Length: 265
Image (cartoon, rainbow, N blue to C red; front, side, top):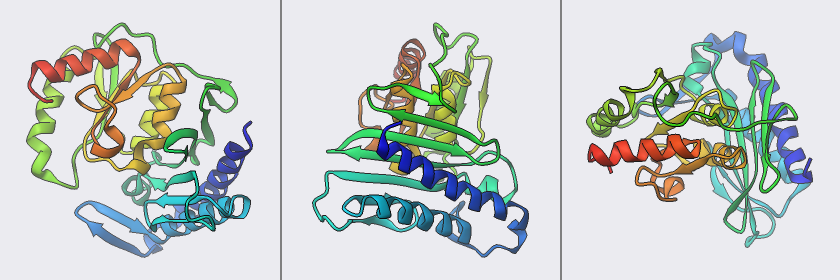
């Protein structure tokens, strides 16, 4: 395992242990709201501090972009390395003890995704990827699914729950994609959904209004598993726009075609 990925895994497991220890005490946690349907708990903050401290100890020069604490630099103000962290993706699920949430950690080197770790603490499943070296689930190589298109596929999605201004547009994308699939799943953790695409559990995924920490690690996992990740126009602007489409090459292509045909680009 790449040394930097090894540190990411160590940090993810430590954070996951903290999340698991608090799962039975959810009713006692202090919960604050960052916005409509956007919650944060003391567990989110604690898990994030554990991740940053673990990485900073090994790589004090590296910078960070984290969901709760924002962007901050390491000892080297112009570091070529940036860690992108979501300490608890799926906080709403966690608050309801619905076991679909994860720790997501990615590393960019000179602006390019280089390492990824997504850890599901409830199942002890670890998804990892290093650029150019493939994607893995618990040290077993994974690949995206083999579906030849949307027909018979299982697709993941997420609802625009934080800003209803895009709800009608989202529902149009749903209608465009849904009709030929075997089903649509909305589990509530984009990072874990993307890991499932990489592992072939989902054939594709799309969502709007996401943040870089939601999708950075999942993007590299899918790319290293043989899939494609892009924006809703089929381009590469998903990290900035927050609108993402992912799948194996054929499923990705058909989703983009459906969105184009229904004027959702």
